[in-house]
Length: 279
Ligand SMILES: NC(=O)c1ccc[n+]([C@@H]2O[C@H](COP(=O)([O-])OP(=O)(O)OC[C@H]3O[C@@H](n4cnc5c(N)ncnc54)[C@H](OP(=O)(O)O)[C@@H]3O)[C@@H](O)[C@H]2O)c1
Image (cartoon, rainbow, N blue to C red; front, side, top):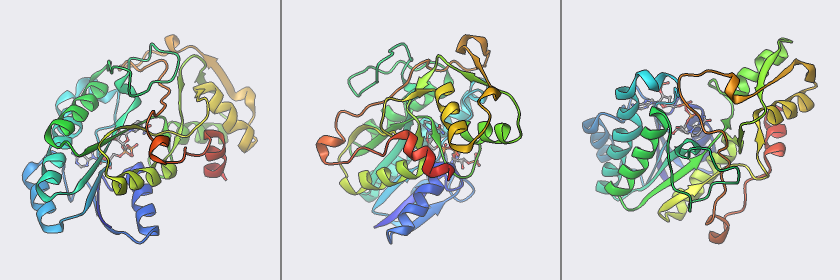
């Protein structure tokens, strides 16, 4: 398949590019420098010249706290950029997959969020991502929206890379015991993004590693267990102890109502995925 991947320097993009190459796809990997998704003319020009059969949008403004004071830049990528890609995909008749987030939910539900739950985003980043979902759907009914959360992988800075570096240096870290999510290994997500592009069935999908999810503290404990780090380095704190510019959902575990019904196997358990990545 000829496949265009945007935001090519990002963490999920890199995993997706690697996976697509590994199965023999013809990959057009477009970095932000090559394709600013907020520039509609550049988007249409590249789509017309490359004519990919499928597009996987991994580009996004991902600085959750920074978005609070940079709403324009955030919306340019996460809302209008996604709409541009959907419109251009429609013009060339390509399948279109775009990534959204567990942050579209308010986090007040302690159980898993499914597609039956109504989004209620808090904060600029979360609102911009939901706006991107709506714009994608309105611009191109064929859009495939993939919500994921707590993603980690090679390259880039993410919650695991920071945690791992500090623990390896023997530093104490604060870990939140009362905030829950479903961790997702970028490599597992990448495979599913590609499967969804092939399946070409529009809708909203929730994609995370399987299992019951965990708290940040539970995740950090697992990292210590796998890596042999001293568990005494973990200082348990409540989410209410941390004052951060952007609000975040306290619980944002995701479950998918449709993937298995379509024959898609659940992604491996999050603990297994974490061990695979760390080893
Ligand atoms: N990481 C998580 O835990 C998490 C959780 C839920 C959902 N997601 C979603 O997953 C997707 C991938 O995230 P990620 O973790 O891979 O993020 P990432 O590592 O920050 O990568 C995002 C990439 O998008 C690029 N970008 C930003 N604005 C752009 C624009 N206007 N045009 C083109 N490229 C642009 C960035 O380039 P620069 O570096 O040059 O800015 C960066 O290379 C995003 O949609 C994100 O919202 C992530």
